[in-house]
Image (cartoon, rainbow, N blue to C red; front, side):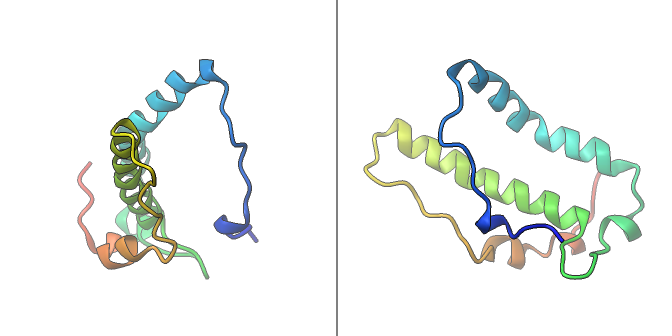
Length: 105
């Protein structure tokens, strides 16, 4: 059974030399996800395992989170004292109904 996301810990600092590659991977994610899921039939792509999200919903959720990352980047550049909070309830992803949206590949 996978560990709940919010119980995981992550390193606080990424070596400076790895920053460009991290940005490249983040920007390439939508195209990579589309390429990976294009060959998966909709019936499998939208099927959720017990107590888990489907592949399509997971990808939609990651794209939803990207919007928060971009907002926070703008806030950092503007010198904001505080960054926008994360939506720990995943309201945006839950309301998006990603499995009901047509997947265009």
